[in-house]
Length: 432
Ligand SMILES: Cc1cc2nc3c(=O)[nH]c(=O)nc-3n(C[C@H](O)[C@H](O)[C@H](O)COP(=O)(O)OP(=O)(O)OC[C@H]3O[C@@H](n4cnc5c(N)ncnc54)[C@H](O)[C@@H]3O)c2cc1C
Image (tube, rainbow, N blue to C red; front, side, top):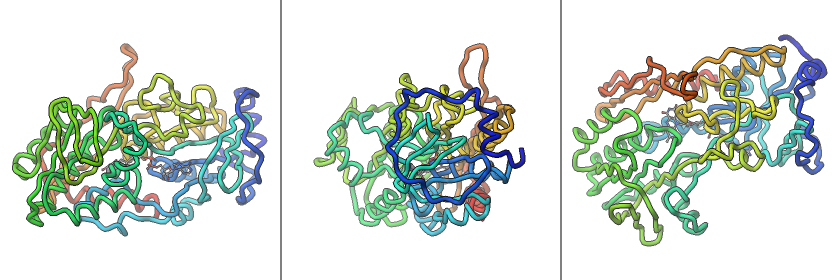
């Protein structure tokens, strides 16, 4: 498609347009200040791995499409590789990038604002800096934490856990707190948890255990890293992680598998499990994740989804009741790895879907790919790897791993180097 105007686009999709007048209408505010464009506009909310990748790939598909990326943060911090930041192998600066550079590189608009409301009947979003109309909307707001999965429901206790023992799976601020906590940690139990359900970055709690234990060894800290997991074995790369725990950190990591958490008291620093009470001195407590609250608030979540994920067409990513609204990244309900590599690779497909639909066509589904390196040793820097692809089994109507998926459980310096290269390649692609 080249240069399809907004009117042409509306005519194309008019027949399928949502006309439900009963949808909540957002209060009138001013129009956001954005460059004028006569072309179809795609608004993307969330400049994480999913939103940034989709913005980039839509412009690659068709540079005439007017793309606006709405992101509340003023700079990008990469969560992938952030365990390496905690473990002292990378700096904050190496993981921080400018949205302005990404927008300039691909030719879209970065609008630094927070989305507050959605009006599907008018095809508008409201932000703290005015409303924006869209022809297609992509919501990629990431995840929120659900502490009730660990039996913690009291808002004060939740706030204390978030503040004192942050999970470090959403923001740079949490990462900085964990780093500071570690820097001041002298002895005792540093607790980590692997949450139930499909959580953001399956390998990460296990990789983090290795990197914190490596820090303990280097600094000769008389402490233990206790990793509590309800699973029988690590969610991914079981053999690779268990071998690293045993061979490299035998007396430093205690892996408590098959252990469910029933409650946490942030005051007394006690975790109640279905087996025992565990006293801890520091930690990064990672509860179950759920799709960011806005998905539920805007009526887009699947009531049957325990993690409040979006009710979307799993092949085209549009909300089942509205072909103009897409939900991507870690808010998707498909059981793909909640990872940056899946967000990035599915973005290529979503960009094709949106671009094709603007021309009245459809795009063929392709599997996303999960590529996950985990640094398990620091001296030398050795990593393991897991690669996954997916397929939909028509018979059972279930998603399954494609047979070409494979774990690489033998740690190596080659994978160690590739870990850094994975980051460099993606940062170059997105930010220049
Ligand atoms: C410690 C750690 C290690 C990881 N390691 C890896 C790895 O090795 N490999 C890998 O592939 N993945 C890894 N991941 C997972 C990866 O970070 C996530 O899966 C990925 O970030 C998901 O992308 P997303 O775009 O869905 O969400 P996010 O990246 O979280 O982006 C969401 C964005 O939406 C913005 N937003 C939310 N609400 C609003 C609003 N109302 N208005 C405007 N903006 C809004 C947020 O500010 C944020 O920028 C790791 C994650 C962590 C935490």
